[in-house]
Image (cartoon, rainbow, N blue to C red; front, side, top):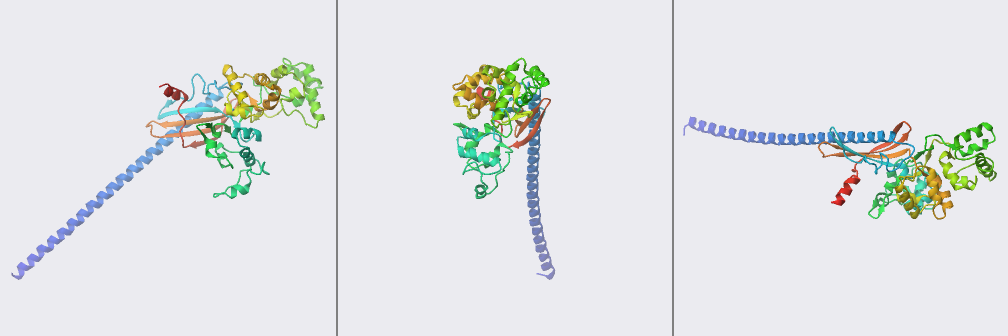
Length: 429
């Protein structure tokens, strides 16, 4: 073969090799671009899904917020002289709030609970907490957690115990800020807090605030029994008879009645009236008179009363936990209010004194009950229009004569239970 032919042969082989390398590189580039395209597409899809989820979440939150505001509006226009389960906000209303409400972008559901239908764990005494939890040690631990100082019992909320846990922390030594904080207290188990099929959980029976207006059914401020030390002043007598003259006479109010009872208490070293039950034990008024008078008077000067339980809204477990109460009394109270709500505290007095050992029941229970409320718990859940996401808000609100303010609001991860009507319908099917 000539030199020229040999050269040309080598050139052809070299060209073929170069084309092979280019082909391999081209295939590699195509594969790389394909992988990048797939990766970018997947990343974009994930980002789109995340953006959609974020949008749905925000829509759900705004819808839930709309539910909170609707409940606040219902509460502020409600009759504040009396609160029952039949009110516009209550579960037994003719048109319950707890039904889906459609809005642009989705729908929401809202549910209102009377905080005065629960036990205020920041105010309840040891006996009440022991009845509620069924465990004296747990009751003592709750009090020790909220109150600074020595433990109520040897198994209370001492800092040493909490510091010895695998993940140590200190007791608050201050009022509870939320019901869920109860899970940090010694002896409170998830089953006790959330409940089981056989027992209602504490989560549905407690609150961290329950306020009741210290006013008459007509919205007037009550007369403080401790002011009767001024009974001998003509101007005070005139003012009292103007306020209470339709219920009591001067004999009931004077030295043989309320004023005399106040002096008797002071002789015993007591600063004054500390309980409405002393209308019977110190002022020596009969129960019929007390029933007429009791909604018009008070032993506290505060505008609101703390820790009272609404006899018209509380469940059996809460009523039975009150001092002087029992399961039988709680059942009877619920049966009585189902026939007709307690319109005033006077009707509660009449009910209590009619129970077995009525005077003792009245004496122990009367300072723990009310018929009107200022604190409410609102649950609201919003769904985005796609129906793929929901958000739940819970709010503790405080009602005043012309407004309802949010004391505390939090977002929850769990949905609200189905509406009661939906559950009843499913059961019938």
